[in-house]
Amino acid sequence: MSPSTRRLLKESADLQTNPSPYFHAAPVSESNLFDWHFTLLGPPPPSPYAGGIYHGRITLPPTYPLRPPSFRFLTPSGRFEVNREICLSISGHHEETWQPAWGIRTALIALRSFMDGDAKGQVGGLDVGEEVRRAYARSSRGWRCEGCEGSRGRENEEVMREWWGVCREAGVRVEGEDFGGEFGVDEEEQKGDEKKKKKEEEGVDEAAAAGADAAVTAATDTPRVQQDPPSQPQPQPQPQQQLQQHTPPATRPSVPAAPATTSQDTPWLDRAIVGVIIALVAMILRRLTRDMDLE
Image (cartoon, rainbow, N blue to C red; front, side):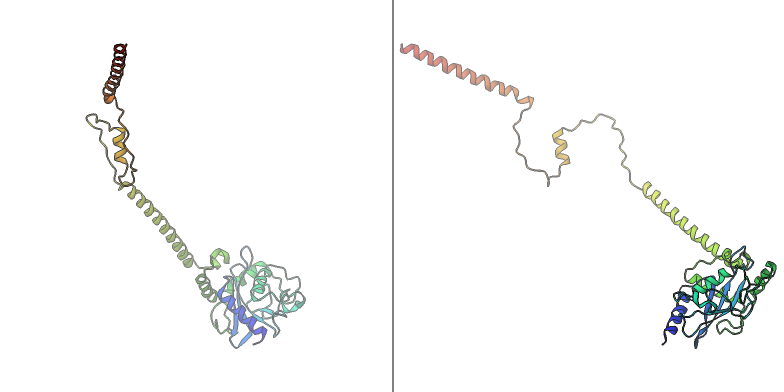
């Protein structure tokens, strides 16, 4: 397989997996990768080509991408002559400005932007009034190509509508205002997209509302302990009793009981002290008496 063939196969696969809603391009047949056809949307408003869908041909040299491709329009546009090679900086007329890093995708994007430029006497260019170009844009949608295997006998608009379906499946945004208003996506497709978008938004709102309702329900269903005020004053527990109630038996450290020092034990202590004093006094008196007897 030659480098040119590998490059064209890669570009063809890329255009399918990463589609653009503004153009469709593919080889005319699987047996000839050097002859392509393209279907291209005109530039957006206020361009006179807005809403137009144009068909054309790309001829690639055997040494592509070292040498540039050639382009020609098959649909009348009022900007380029029909079935004549176009002289552009991306075409075979200017090999000195071509870059091998460019490709068919790059060339079609440039070709779409070149449509709004002035011909200025370039090869294959036309200078006609805007009304003529707008008329060509309207009629271009019904133009048919008999040389494409994939779109033979089908109108340009039909080809692009099918391609827009491929773009949507690939996640590419397709909206009518991008294609020239009424000449873009039809109203039914736009309404369908709007309904789908609105339904998705409503689904998000419903989910949010359901979540809020669930949160409120959970809050209202939480049991509450009602403590009625007692009719009579209740005795307050002693601090020691409160500590015993709130301290789990398994984790409470064993502390030796401290000697009681309450006010109820005070009379007994006083009596003990008085008894000791009396005993001491009696012993002193007894000793004094004994000493006096000895004398």
